[in-house]
Structure formats: C-alpha cells, structure tokens
Length: 74
Image 1 (tube, rainbow, N blue to C red):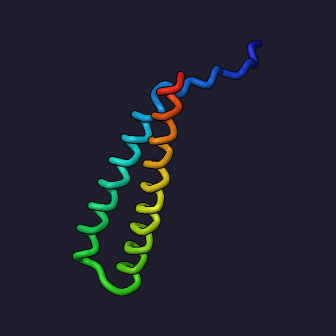
Image 2 (tube, rainbow, N blue to C red):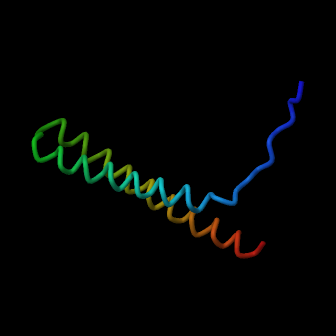
C-alpha cells in the first residue's frame, strides 16, 4: 500500500484563482439580479453575502499576485 503524499503542484494556482474570482463575480451579479425581487431581511442577507464575496475576491487577487511573483522567481 502506497501512503506517500502527492507532490505539491502549484503550477496552475494562478489560473485556478482567476477562475474562482470570475465565478465569485458571477455569483455576485446573480445575487444582485435576485435582489430586484426581494426586500427586507432577504435583501439584507444578500447584501451581506455580497460584501463577504468582495472581501474574498480581494484576498484571492492578493493571492494571485503572490503566486505570480513566486512563479517568476522560479
């Protein structure tokens, strides 16, 4: 039985992160469209979720910069 860990392949991290950013943006846009038909608590919930999504996007964009810089040094 082979229980060795797989090597850490980070070569496509930038692409994966960029795709995650795009997916998150699409989710935000869909939520914005849904908000047109909601009000009250549901609308506040969607707005809060989109704020968290924006924070996630900022973090992912920083990680993209870090990964790109790391790949340049290799």
